[in-house]
Image (cartoon, rainbow, N blue to C red; front, side, top):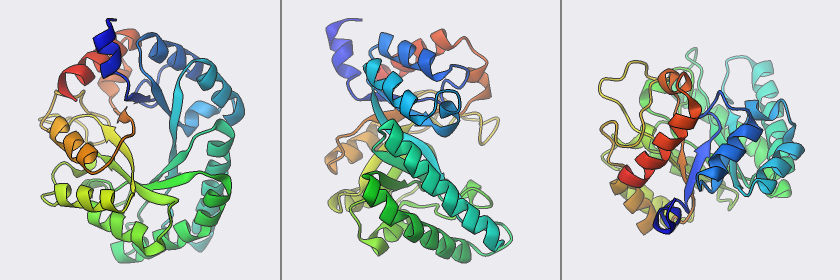
Length: 277
């Protein structure tokens, strides 16, 4: 890889879920060999190694650990389930700390058995329960708004405005927002919301992929950058103009790409990133 390409990859991060067939050690080696600088670890990838050893593998492999995915899923009509969720999020914070991840991404959750407003109140209560421990451990929390199609069971936080309002309610430097283009590209207020979030200093993460047309599966048919209808460069420009200086994190859920040779897929990711991000 030439020097110009290496400079262009200086802010590229890949999520382990993107290359799900690879174990963590293999993923670290394969990412590093291509000049990828960052890795976001999904909790399932820690099962074999444990959090502390995972952190060592990543650091010794020359990568930055950008964040841990994922916490959240606070709402439920069942009180015991809500209590269990809080315990699970506290455990995720410990894993993030042990691995050396500075950020835990929250997919906040929803319950179709109650109103979105009730779910949002339970999300607020869940964050309130874990935020003090996050501060103690030095791990930031990022609320990730999800596309409204996921409002039934995955998240009642569906717009940037809702995420920003939730973060502002707590007024903590440990709580911010993760912007995933797959979930927010459609929002006509997105540019204004990113600018507002940037002024608050709450732009904590930026996830990229593409929305394929047509989409075969709303969860597991995300596209490579440039493969769909999202203007990723435009949104990245808004992020950077608003003060974001972090990694551009490739997060792709795809049955098609998980079944592809992962060496080939990683080469495709690097090329798509350089050409379309």
